[in-house]
Length: 200
Image (cartoon, rainbow, N blue to C red; front, side, top):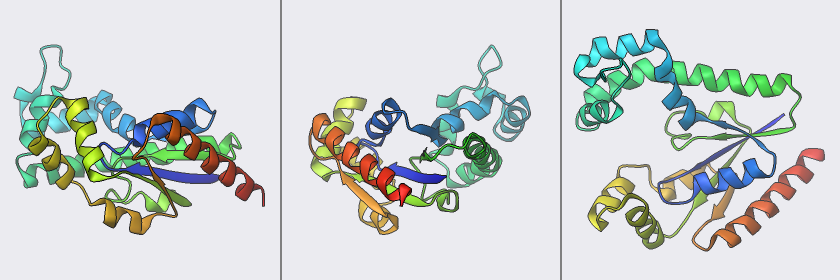
């Protein structure tokens, strides 16, 4: 089974590309969805409350993600603490999902993760596809999507590994500075190439 990693910085269109692949019948392991779902695990949730306090708990006992976000994104030490609790759980679930597809004899799957390189998921994949775009377009997309200022958009971009550094890890790069139709064409070319290559 070929495992293709898919990543890209905020506003570059990673999620759009992932949806195109999914619509074409390629199975996706979405690490970002897994990262949100892990808080359904009561044991983990109890550890999070124990570490960060019960003021991040909603009345129904569920996690108030915004409250937790305010704590960890303004304090590097707290973020490290949270990552120590959550990353092993996320990695295990990602590994389990990949193995499930292996056992079902799938030919190709995609591991979709915003922080694929930064979170050291490279050992899970065979090839890495990085989606990029021009910074001015990236800024416009973030401002439009998140209804934020140019400064806030730039701040979000700067908080991530640069596109230039990320592409150093890439086996394949798709530039998504154009339209959705152009992205679709590029994704179909990539899919056909991978399928042919995998048959060799």
